[in-house]
Image 1 (cartoon, helix red, strand yellow):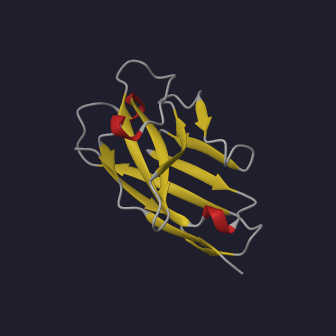
Image 2: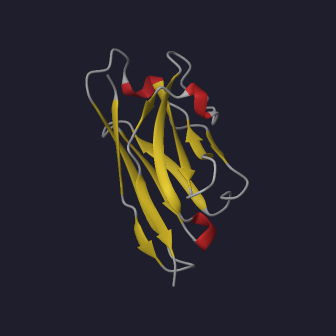
Length: 131
């Protein structure tokens, strides 16, 4: 079973930056790069929304319109870790951030941000943007 653990959240001032990480572990039948990884976030009283996703080989990345140009997703398959670099943060980015894995198998260059496709989820890390 693939397990995911997020880290890197915290309190940051508007305009600041944070780098989130999502580390995979556990005994999965599929290699790590068979999984596309996505980031989602959920603010209090709001629905969960997709932020970004990255394909298994790291060649393809997609972003929500609200974060495009400010956030960058990347992955290190040797370390089984995905990163989300978040710059120019605003209070609207305040939320709990979750990473999730979507098994694509042999298709390593695609990802999809629809949350129902993701079978493995981390517990989340809190990001608070406030002065």
